[in-house]
Length: 335
Image 1 (tube, rainbow, N blue to C red):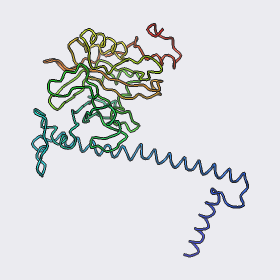
Image 2: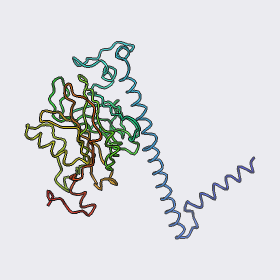
Image 3: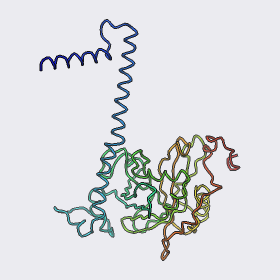
Image 4: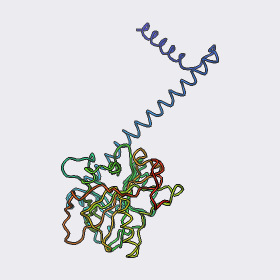
C-alpha cells in the first residue's frame, strides 16, 4: 500500500512538474508552462461558466417556474387556503387565481400562456407569470421571488397601466433570449422566416389580475435597437392619437416577416407586444430584437385564425443595418 501511494505521489509530482515552472527550467520551458497554465485556467473557467449557464442556473429557474405554475394552476379554493394567518392586502377585484402568487410578490400583474396545436415546432409552451415595477431594469436579472437570476422574469413596461380600467393601446412585455431556451427564447425561431412555425403562432392568452384576455398575432418583426447605427423604429410606444395608432399598425405590418392575412387591426383595437433580444447569427444585428405583436380579441369575436392566409411578407422592411450586413441594396426609405 505504501508503495502504491508513493508511486501515485511520484506520478502527481511528475504531472505538476510538467505544467508548473520549477527551478532549473530553461526560459523557453518557463514560457511554455506559463502559456499552458493560462490555457488550462481559461479552459476551466469556460467549463465552469458553461456548466452554470447551461445547467445550474436553468435548472434553478425551471424549478422556480414549476413551483409558480403549480400555485397559479391550483383551484382557487385550494390556492387561497394556506396555513397561518393571511395578512396580505389584495387589490380589490383581483382574480383569486393570483392570491398565492401575490402573497409571494406583490409585483405580479399577470400570466402569459402560449401553446401550439399538433406537432410543436417551438420546443415547448410559454406559461409564465408577468411582473411589473417602477423601471425596466430590476427584473432583467431578478426572478419572481427576488433572487438574482440571469434568466430574469417576464415583465410589463413600467409605463403600462394594469389597474382596473387602465387604458393601454400597447401593452409591452419583455423577456430574455437565453441559450437554455427559457423565457422568450423560442420566439427567435420565427426570425428564420419559417412559415410552418409562423402558422403555429395564432393566439396568446394574457390574464391580468382583473381580466382574461386573448390576442391574435398579426406581426413578427426584427428591430435594430442600436440608435448609434440607425434611426430606431419605436415599437414600444404606449400613447397614440387615433391617426398615429393607425399609422403605427401600418408600420408594424410593413416590418413583419409574415403577412397574417386573417387578422385585421382597427383604430380602436388594443395591442400586446412581446420583445426579446434576437440572435445575431440569424439577424446580422449586434443589438437586434425579435418582436411579436398581437391585437386583443374583440367582444364576441371568434378566436379561430385561418392559418392558410398566413404567408411570407415578400416586401418586408428590415432594419437598415440588416441590408448593409448582407450587402443588399438599401430600400428607398433608407436612402
